[in-house]
Length: 286
Length: 286
Image 1: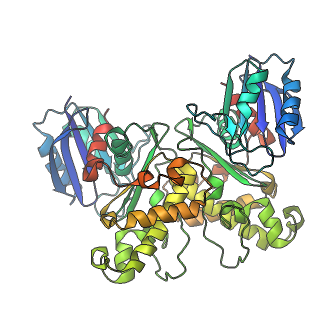
Image 2: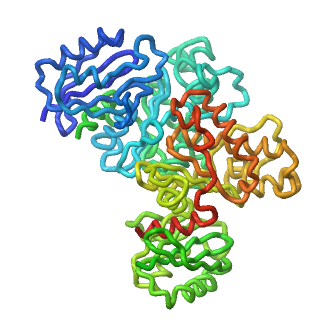
Image 3: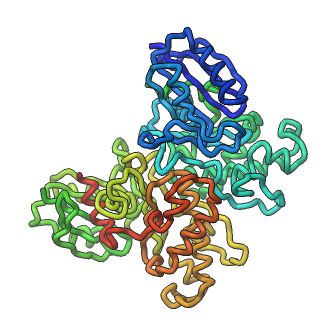
């Protein structure tokens, strides 16, 4: 079976060809400009590939309710040109094959559970900390959907007492994303994260917010593995700081060996590296 | 089919007889003293009832991992005598029937989805605010389990700036339960909630914490219905306060008619009233 995979992001559309085992044999990156331009390039890439199915993990918010008239749309995004764009409908015009569709982070969680750091588990959480903060989760073998899809990057967190930064989420100000995504780091300190490697205070603060969020996710979802990736997590010093702080916040309450003794194996980077999203898109077809 | 149901609580064990339609024909309340005493009374109640199966929703933490050697145990509870008690094993000694087992709040969420306020939905959240704060949830038609079971009552929330109360959770101090369960209200204000009906500040503060938690649950789980019950919620003035505050916190971000326009139907009291737990225990058998 030839599976086409699309990781539809706000900066680029990564397209690939893979098989049922998640093996990706070809990939290409297409800039996200206007829907017309970007989709034309996407269609051109897949044109002669004879895919049997397409899997799409998309930036959001998206409409995942199959009974809805706007199923498959990117809905209320602030991204110019993409508001209320019928992504699945447009792809269907070009390719008469089954299309699996979910959020980019739900797809990545699925990919990690099939072939990555959570392989064989029926439960995991995938968090990406970059330009924004997105989180997807697999619970009891299923990706979470409900009223809409999760928007875990926007939960409210307790402010660090030494942090006077206002936060920069256009909806919530100082929610998690507003305080801890890459642009928040840059706004707060006046430099990009990469230029602040030797400033411990920066990473202590960052770990404080990420750990609070992860502790809340653990208490609410009880995932069997917590996978954290994204541009900000290229600062590998964050992992031990986050693990320690999560353990401290949970205070011994969650009686699990993973948390009490094996935190190094519990909160981990993506096993699939930057391929988690694309592999996950393949998984959406399976 | 005759189904025996047990809502195993820290104060009382409510036992009942029901059928597949959740109709409860008999119920009795047995004080929770020692496991020996309490279970003897439970066994006596069910002795001649000829139940075909038993459903048990229990206070926790409990071990729900069927592959574990302590499956069916109440594990690390601070409640005297009940630490590491093999509840399911003890029941099996008396009744040679299939036993369904889950947390009390997961059972209640299930009961509400089968016969109550979330009837027909494959997704809902059930929260009880009383002596403690417990939350169960149904996601994609399944009750949430993972590493352990959810412990959503213990999430960290942002403190109200006028609240100097330390919180009283023995594990986390000022987590949600530590700040907003019944005993926290009593400790903070020096009186029980029932005696504080005419003190708006009490309920403003309470709604502030509950709404934060619910907003986080909504962002993480996206439940199709949020059901809130328990002793503290007998103060019905809390519902409009909580709804308004949840809407304010979400800031228009979650694009759903339920949240933007129908909040009165979205955050609601239990449809089954005080029977949610017992009905849910029946549901665990189905």
